[in-house]
Image (cartoon, rainbow, N blue to C red; front, top):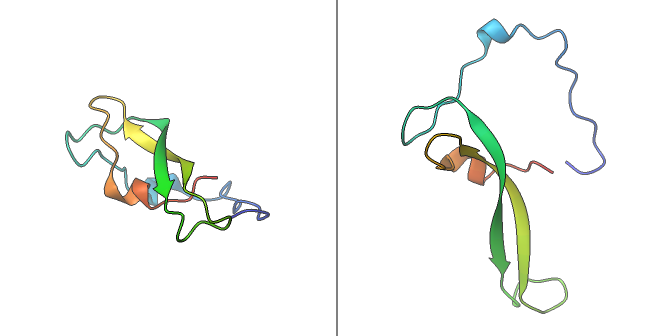
Length: 75
């Protein structure tokens, strides 16, 4: 999503939106956190192994990261 503007949601009725709950404990509060991914030298653009930080959301109560958040691009 680099270089793109986020969609304008100012006129969206959030009563039609579904709450997202933690897959482990059912909590609905989340905090932004960071996961680290290791990129193999075989697929790295410079041919060297790299550690890549990736933003995610973790449950405020138990710290679990839902599977759908692991695949999100929150840049």
